[in-house]
Image (cartoon, rainbow, N blue to C red; front, side, top):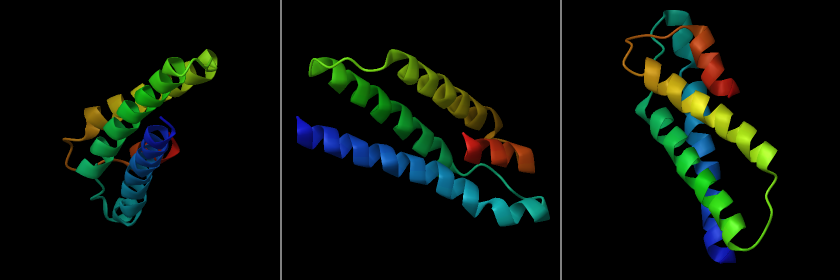
Length: 105
């Protein structure tokens, strides 16, 4: 079970890198007004959601007691991130504030 947990943690970190790296890659395009949401950001956010839920499920399955308040706050922030990315992904260009919001979450 520890191997599966390790794999899920690595995938969770990869999802974070996909979202944050995609946002950083679009920073130079903000000055030109051509910044957009890359598909890798959307898939990275979904990977974060799936692996995060799987990691919490593994804690419960192994008999542990996770900090439910911390998990709840992280879930709310992640759902806000997924909703924000899903809402603006079809726009031709996004503002700097929208891009900074993605990077900040």
